[in-house]
Length: 172
Image (cartoon, rainbow, N blue to C red; front, side, top):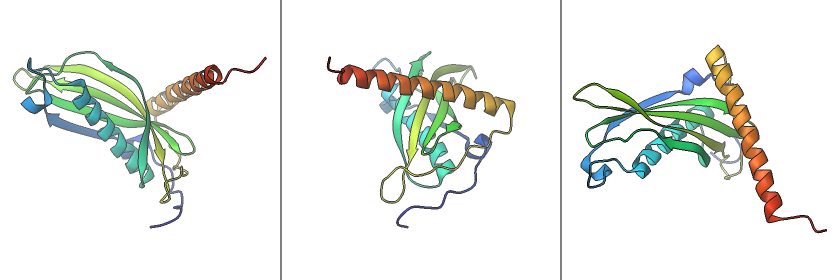
C-alpha cells in the first residue's frame, strides 16, 4: 500500500472495543511483589492502540496519554483485565478510554486499579495524519462518552494554547 487510503465507513465503539487480560508474573514486579506502573502503562497503550487500529484499519501512533491515575496496586499473580473503548474521533485523532482491573485469582476479588484516556493519530502510508472514519454512537452510553471526550479535547487544546503563549509571549 502506498499513498493515502480511502476513508472507510464509520464504526460504533462496540465494533472496535477490546477486553484483554494477562497474568502478572515476577518479572513484572518490584521486590515486594507490586507490579511496576510502567508495565501497566505499556498494557494500557497496547490495548488502546488495538482499538484505534481496529477503527482506522491502518497505522496509528500514540499522541498523548491523559490523566492516568493508579487507584489500587496490582500484585504478582493477579490477572490484569484491560477494557478499552473508542470514545471520540476527530479528523485524524481518536480518543480511547482504558479501564484496568486486577483480579485476585484465589479470592475472585476484582479491583479497579487504573484508568486512562489516550489520543491516537491515524497516519497514511507516508506517515502523515490521515482522515479517520467517523464514530457512530448508537447508544446513550456511547453518546455520553463522546460528549465527555469532546470536553477533554477542548481542555487539552486550551492547555496547549496556554503553553504556547507562555513559550512565545507577545512583545510589548
